[in-house]
Length: 304
Image (cartoon, rainbow, N blue to C red; front, side):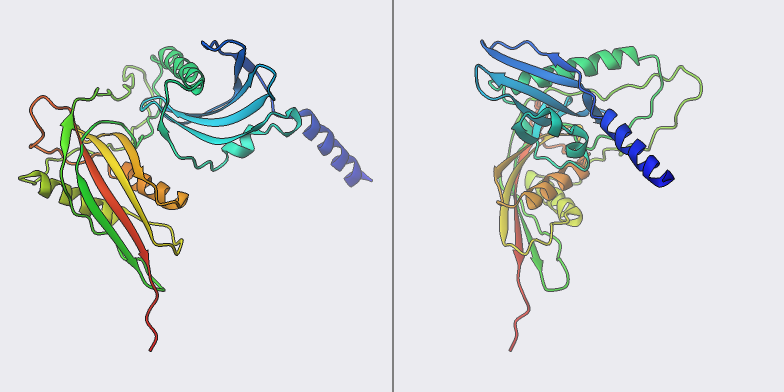
């Protein structure tokens, strides 16, 4: 009897503690279009990245909900999931748990830019409010900048092990990009939280662009861990690297067609930050673009 009573109480409490919703209207330039951000769904997953849910409706069309991820520092956005809004099935926490999403530059012509800007504004306000409080800084491996060149990465795998990629470089050009300053932590308060060690940029030993690309190719090769998808794939990615070694931006020029493989390539590009400083960047340029071709080959041992 006691067990039944406890079970009943659990079910009742579960019903009461449904996901809280606090839909905040967001102004857009679209007529007869409604956009809301669920303030209760916002989750800060890194110093500049947020997960959150939006609800939108255009005219008499069905109201929909989308679960998004925004990077405030890079102005990149990813759509985790989009579906018809149903209050009974609205569970942002379940979609945000271990969320993996492909991030890309926010399109200024999309209505999503308004929700992204809303989150950015909240982040700026939160940063101002907490400017006098010492907080633990989490290393954000992704910080955008510009630089260009081309390389080739080959990965071979037998039945039991993956071989590492090999990368070679081609051409490049440089263009100007805005340098993003890292978030500063107030050091005047007592009981400071010890900051994690930051990776320090070193100077490349490369004497020309070809050698510089070869250095980065080797670094990517040593750190890339492609998924064991068993597919032969090729991905072309353009990395925009700042003179400070930051990764300002990445563009998938050609997708492998396998989401896990593309994610692994983006992940290794972020993991290698900061990149070595290249003294050969054109004078006045803040970044350089480098293009890499990742080829993942799966083959079996030949049987006689």
